[in-house]
View 1 (cartoon, rainbow, N blue to C red):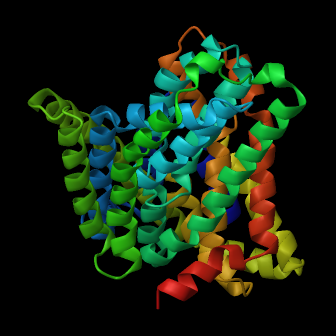
View 2: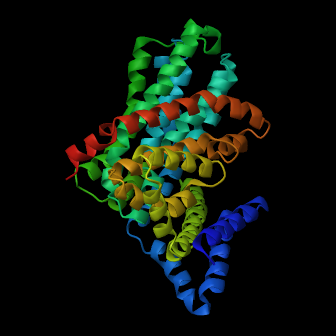
View 3: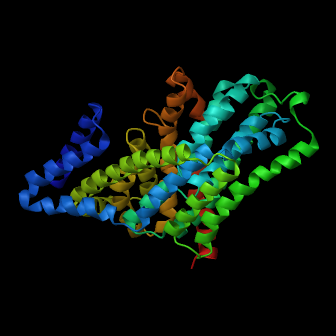
Length: 436
């Protein structure tokens, strides 16, 4: 059987199983095991064991449960509420101020925890009622929360960056540094959009009434709520960028900082630790199963010669290398509409990264472009993960409203992606300066 026909059968089977509602982990692993057996026989099952064993022993991936634990503790520690109260006072008096405050908090949460769930769930619970009670446009409020939460994919310490680095053996420190400016640019684009929309149409985000704006003294006192988040960000990212600690060691420091933060806010108790550990166990078990299933799938696909086939196909096209990069971007977005981001990394990264190197592009630059595409996929239906997080908190909200809310922010993400492609130094400058 030709590789092309095998590819069609492999991905056709995967899509068919996804449509049945089977968890993607078992679908990927099951298809790979069946194809391995029928193509190479029982003797090839050692590949199944190897594919499962390698992710479980990856030093980089040891940081995963630590960052997830840090996120769970921070989500329950009271830091988010304190941050929102402070920024509520500072930005509330301006048009669209609460949406701007929400976006800033989401970016800070992304820099503290590295996953999207913490920011989206927290802001849906805390910020959304505050905005709706003050007559904010629902689509603007929901869009700000989902777009801001999606920054957890891009702003370090991103869990997806760690998975990508482990798969293609890219420097995780350089990836973290490379994601800083793209993350800040997207945050700025979101804030500018919310500011301009509310300046043109004040009814979309009215300012707080005078009695809720607080005194100058109250505003300056509230700044102390920034000390712990900024300190934790420096403890995690600063130690990595300065070469003091590896990502795994920095994650341990982050967990300690999260525990200290919970203690300072008087939320540290056994129920909190118990809930955080149990939630971490569930999330990490899900992630590692997806990684193992996707690793087995990609190992089979690469093992049957697909990488060589795709590379030869790309070279044979003779197309401009930028046309090929654009095609890869479109393909990643389409995959993101139907698949979770972790299996996309496991399946696509080992195939596309060598092609990009063959075309003469910087692999670190492409790694961040890849991650930005995954951030776009977090918002794009029907499988946009951010949509499901909000839906989980607000089961009565229609998907139609959520879809309409993310349209302008998805356009802004595409603009941010385009800027990073046209000006590669947005990604490459910081890693070249601080990591050698």
